[in-house]
Length: 214
Ligand SMILES: [Zn+2]
Image (cartoon, rainbow, N blue to C red; front, side):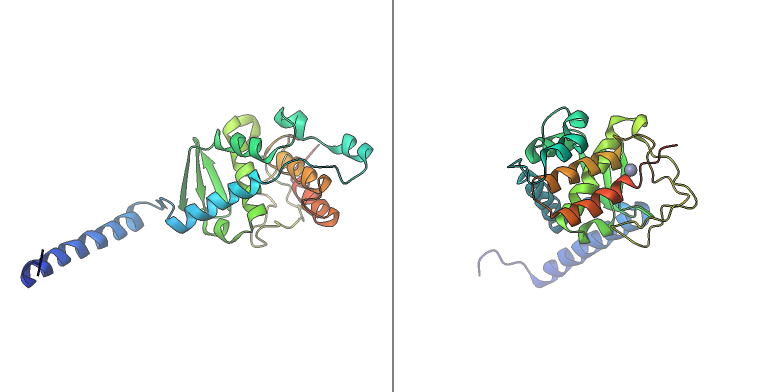
């Protein structure tokens, strides 16, 4: 046999390895709520960006006057609709992703880093893109922080019904915050026929519902 080791030595190596693995598992679980994304989670994240990058402007499928009246994309992002550009826009704002408990949120942004909760990975690719787009806006500073939704806020959270926005910091007072930009993006998806008008409208309205104007 080539490269074989005495059985007793093999056991001790295995034991030390097992202790090390246990130590790592427990130390991350006990001392930190946050961990690096695993291979599967990285794949899900990459798929989200590939999907976004596949979305490019084609012929507008809605009437031009409606488009001109309601399209906000270019005035917000300063470039015309492009999934590839939007992907770069997000990636220039988020440097690091981690996985952990996010409480009442699907994801959380802090100092260039996004913490993704379990729910994120069971969303479909469009919803994942919306979450990333939303979180990336937080990189642009305090002006895009949220305000408290009214106590009588009755709109459902489209991505998780267990999350109730009423009385929580889940609304915007600006039209180009995290919710305004996802609405602007969804509008383009409807206009270019990536989503049918009914789905685009429901999704658009849902994001807009979080923009509170006095
Ligand atoms: Zn937010």
